[in-house]
Length: 382
Ligand SMILES: *Cc1c(COP(=O)(O)O)cnc(C)c1O
Image (tube, rainbow, N blue to C red):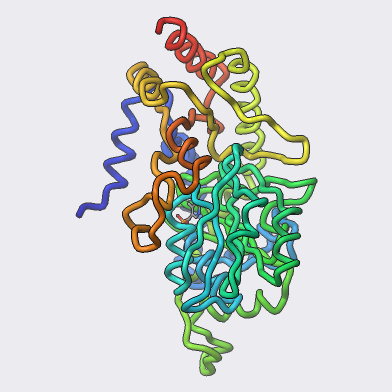
């Protein structure tokens, strides 16, 4: 098996309007490289001072007391489960409509993922969580899909009632808000990813955990660094998942110089799409709620004849993508949990009809208009 990502990025470059923005993103890379040089001179490689600074900046973004930087978003989720004491035989309730990493983290922590259908807005159906609770349930793990916050009031209510903990998979949702409170600070623990295709991106892997609990924060600091209290004392044999200081330099640079604009542009672009697309009957955009500040990691539509539309857009230079065509419960990896088609009709229906349009900060209004015209043409001609 090959490492497929480099080829994937190259293949994307044939489009006029890309989903990815990796080339445009770091035209200021010399500035970052200079800062990395000083890390090299100081030998400040593991958990260096820049990691501390990133933790402070993210805690401020998520409005939490603590942030703990780790190796990836997936590790953030897995370590959070471990910090809450999740172990073999425990169950974690999560959504069937997510990225593989949410489930991978649960399984890696030793627990069993228990799927719950989502709502029309792609987020876990809070009204169905209660049916999934068993004596083995420990944690509810909602995902703020595409950067749109879940109804955390309802989710926290169920959790409190049944003495469960909540971990937000906020990997899409940095600077997102629910009722004027930041994602990542809406429950016991929040998890973010710095993957190159996330809203805040570094030059490889990285992730971070946010929490208001000092006890969980201390536990997580141990877990990410071999369980070490200090150089000679190990509290608990654990993991090595630290945010690389070199990646921390990139994260800090993006946080200080770009994040505000990234979020602002994504929101503006999404609203412009909403405005132009609202009268095309064959597609459905999400209803926006004033309780939620969406940060549009993805701009999602439900479209009639989705696959044909995707082809039409792609052959005209627009990199429309499908995130994702197969929900988690129908993946080969989930076979052993014995779900079948029809179990989660909302997720399955969304997986068949959803398409995402490029929405990142370098997309221009002209490009949005061009894309929308293609969609309009597609439906008017057929
Ligand atoms: C990207 C992503 C993750 C994992 O993040 P990595 O940093 O790639 O490990 C987890 N959950 C969701 C929903 C994601 O999109």
